Image (tube, rainbow, N blue to C red; front, side):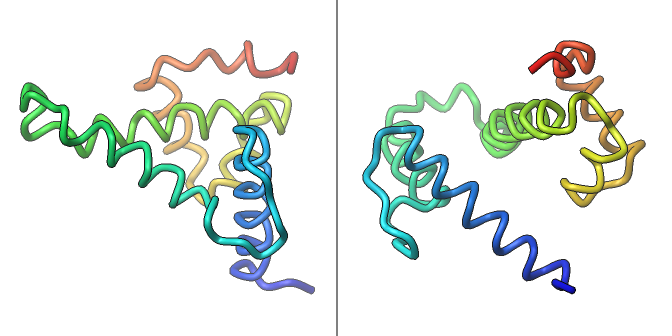
Length: 114
């Protein structure tokens, strides 16, 4: 049986590979140049210098919510709206997931049909 950390590592690598491919990047197994982290880094590298400091004190939460929303939506889609399974995959409590769904304005019912 796989440990939780090794399962996550495999899942994370798989997600990073699919993310890179979906953005049109060539992929070779094990290549880290197009990891999810490096893709986010490259995007932030172009955005952060252009900020006019109107988000001062709020940038961290803004970026986190921009990543958190699609992550939760995609996991909900993959579980066909099953919040208990989604919470397990995300590694958070079911009630925490429900709170995030509400705060982020995600429609759980819209995730069932994908």
